[in-house]
View 1 (tube, rainbow, N blue to C red):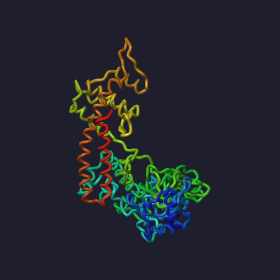
View 2 (view 1 turned 120 degrees about the horizontal axis):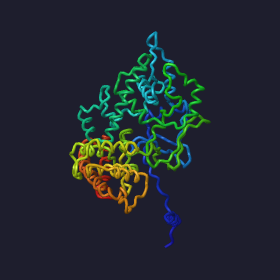
View 3 (view 1 turned 180 degrees about the horizontal axis):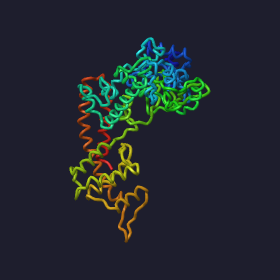
View 4 (view 1 turned 60 degrees about the vertical axis):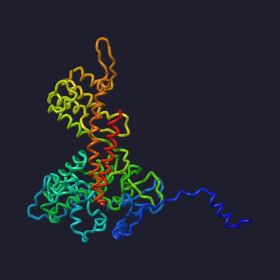
Length: 496
């Protein structure tokens, strides 16, 4: 039977190779805040881009390619007048009248972070009366997934607040390295609050009275500021505009290193993103250029840097699944081990207990060579990091035998310099690694075994909490972190 023309067309079409379907992973935002922000930025000279605000299943709010973007294209250009820098804020504060006849000239200027945080605070107090209200409405309303926001308390303090149920639970289930970072953040936060109040207390304008609003403002800067790179060209422009004049609030540095940039700060992070950034002196714009291609409908990313998930959670309030920079930190375990050794509670190896002074002397040797701290294990390496080996090769003999000879330290020094030690008839020496590698292997496997046990308990608690509050993103992040910790520790408890 003779087939028709339509049949032949269908057959030819079916025989042709099919093009790969482009999956639109985001839904373009129709929010009024986004529309107002685009119109406002356009009025202030921001060039049109191929980006649009969208919502994604896994990353939530982010920027989507509204057209195909080729490698080498500029993702976004932010004009200089839209860059909020510390020198501009200091200049603005200089124009404010003083509350007293004799102005109290502070001896200290606001740092960049302090200046930007105060600017965010004061503009948020003005609400719709602010000329930057379109930008302010685009900022997150809270930072519930950032540990510092949860633990900073309701009143000013340089210590974390763990009184309520949720903060107490979060503090107990944070990995020790994350908790240490958050403790340091709280100190810096309180210090910035105190210093900023002293600087602006005598000036007319919004004063720091709302601690929670300031915590939010401080985190806006920490999570959304951009690094300007080489600020030479930006500095010359600011001089021409008179923005570096100094009197009461003399800048700490004539160079701005960070800034807030509308629209640009809506781009999410990915460790696979390949971009270049910098301030363009000819166009007076901050430019981000992509080195990879994006199809229409794909989410467009930038990179915040090669950070592990512990850092990402503490600083930004999110983590990356399958993070290639993920590591297992052993600083806390090393400190706890040495504390037990010095208090004679860890004698499983020792023939005689080493003195605390001897252990401290060995630690000082490591510090002198810059080898103390930052002890890490990576699931992608075949052996521990050099810093872990250096510490164990020096410390284990003291724990095993209760003392360490000058010959042992000398052998360790030569191992550190990479010198080969071969036995001779007169000096029966051998490599430190040959002597101490079995003991180091046993130590790592024992410590990682304990981490596996702890992470099993933590992971079960986090998953239970997340099942009760599935919308809480912080519990989701903690689940990923403890799962990665568990897997890495299991790897090292049976490997090497």
